[in-house]
Image 1 (cartoon, rainbow, N blue to C red):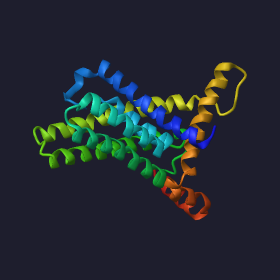
Image 2 (cartoon, rainbow, N blue to C red):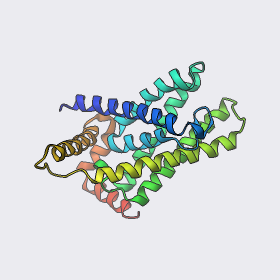
Image 3 (cartoon, rainbow, N blue to C red):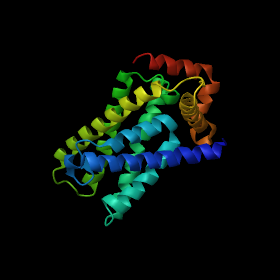
Length: 232
């Protein structure tokens, strides 16, 4: 599959996964809503973090598009400024955590080297960043009613959603075979593993991620990344 097609499917897959998770969340956890757009359990937050960890910048683009669609058409159709701000902030926080994982955890394809402890660290970091970004925006926009209650609820909801999605997907990804098998099912699962690995590697072929590409050619940079990753 060509690089351009991989970028397209990484973005499209992220968008579809986010929309599907939002639909499931509204069907199953609608009763956990604190205010519109803030839930005690929010599964799309897990998809936000997972997609960037799996496909990097492509995931952030997919999240931005998904955020614009849902915010402009569903959450805040009569408040385009808030909708656009929410979409931007919702894609920024997970991308920053993805960059953190690259730098300090030597992130690899399919979350292979992310332990449960590291996943918890990333989930807390994402939930804190996303909540802080949104509530700083709320404060700047003058939306301060129940500000602290909303902040706490969003953090808990983002953390719960992120942990549910990350740990479930980590377990499922661990089941994917590393080599093709003798049955259509095992071959299909291997194809998924191959596609995820290809999508992960494809992000480093673009100029947008040149610092990481440079690290691949700099043995010292790789050693520094691995040394930092051993701390956790």
